[in-house]
Length: 507
Image 1 (tube, rainbow, N blue to C red):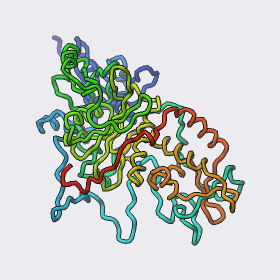
Image 2 (cartoon, one colour; image 1 turned 120 degrees about the vertical axis):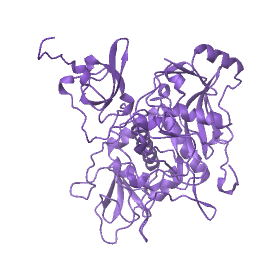
Image 3 (cartoon, rainbow, N blue to C red; image 1 turned 135 degrees about the horizontal axis):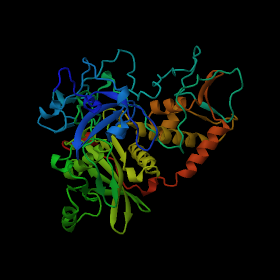
Image 4 (cartoon, rainbow, N blue to C red; image 1 turned 180 degrees about the vertical axis):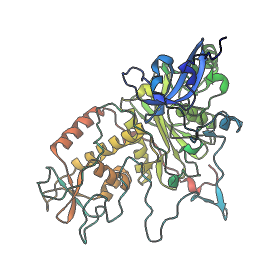
């Protein structure tokens, strides 16, 4: 070798974990900034696992060299705290995002303490419910954020709201315009940036399924399952799920669609089907109309099925964590019936005893059934259960981006449907209704009702009272949206009595 000769460096060798550069997205001519999370050799070629910055993690994927713009590569900063793989291995578990059981409850005089890690509220003030960061803050009883207040102004909660069918004339007091757009009931649901939950609103320690993002590591940030087969559908997972390590190397994981048992080959699945007698989820069928049924499953009585259901859901839910201790939860599984049995469409879970009156902990519609109205059907069923219980409810926060869009759409349609059914009173030419009456009719929590009206920019303060202004465009959009909801929940088909779990010594 000659003196001073230098071996040329392949730019690909400089691409290490933590580097950022533009990466071409699949099926699109876009080059957003992405972070390299891992690299590996496959058939004498190098592939890279990338996360697109400000995009949902379900879009993360393995890419080849030709999709990287190495010329614009940003090397990782020395002071950046890049997660390391040892964090998961040191715990003796391949998933630090899952827990073997629910955290121990703090006990005070033999009574569970539900106020763990919760900020102290000021004396004399109502504690505000933590809302999703994309929505406006919940108003107090006598003030709505963004609405000009007048001395001795009535509260929108107890004072009737006048319903105006036409827009206010120029010069009248209006809400300032919001940056959020009105939910489009017809358009596709696009990915939105995810934000870390605020430390002040940490998940409760009494069965909450909200994920603590502070323990994310490089293992749980990467998808570990390539494909699953559930019944007649092959589904590509969105997120990490702690399935057994020996299954993660299989190109496809096969699941029994009735008991959710997972096996590594189709031959194993066929042998299992010969032994499996289930043709529907375990538990009680509490609702049936046409080919749609709901089954109520107790997480304590059917622990194995509940655990497998949580494991399946983790493939498509990033905001919720997996609890092997399913005792505190009830699971409501929606199925579609045919001559082969009851096929799972989606589900939601709820706590048997919720200190915050949450009526949903986790909710999921499986990808093959999305954008067909089943998501709103699950949400509607959860509120019908709340109506039978005689109380209002709300989903546990934080919501995923798709979950927030679904709930915003459901709240908007349900509240507008309630308002449009009002008849004109004899004393006034405009119908009147209070926020509390809307809550009683729909079982939607007060904070969600007010934030939805604000989000739609419908509630205004005019001549000493709050009024809801419905423009022809809003009414026309509502009518079009409701014509697309061909499947609705019929309360007459629900055969269910609520249980008072607080009076039971043991779940």
